[in-house]
Image 1 (spheres, rainbow, N blue to C red):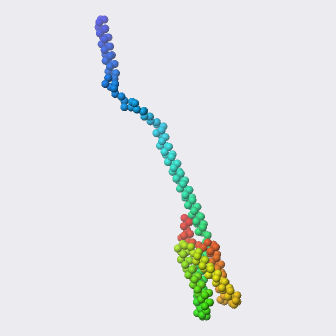
Image 2: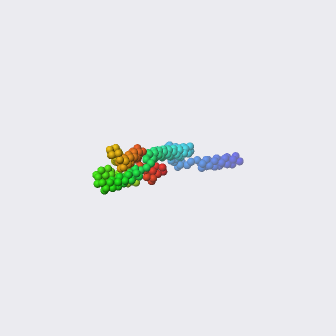
Image 3: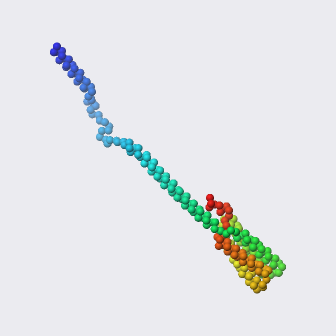
Length: 218
């Protein structure tokens, strides 16, 4: 019996030894190393991954807000510039120079021509036909420039100078002859036209055409 028990114990010990060898690493695998051994460890931070997109979005939103503010500032500046330009353009006379200048020039030309035909006087040419024709042409040029949106300042100034010269000559003739017709009438008419041209010049020139005056209000 003792021998059987000893044999059974030896068998149990051998079986336990075999199980222990089965669970242990084989000698051929002892030389294998993990590919990550000896290399720095790769640490992934969930907090960093989560915060970077939000930081980029916040930076992008800040840039967009800055661009919107810059565009709004430029828009306000453009509005102020347009309003200021509109105020400058609104300063003008209530009536155009050619509205009265063309009829005035036509009247002087026709009356001077009639006077020369009946009296054959050179005064009718000098104080009637010539200044009337000049005023008529200047008024027509002023109308042409006004329609194209250009300034008629020089034409208005020239008409004002002609009217002032005629007012002085007609007044002088009236004081010498004391005749109401034609010198008194022409002196009064020329003086009134000289004052009218002066008003147009001081008021800022002719009012702009409607299509050009409506542009600053848009």
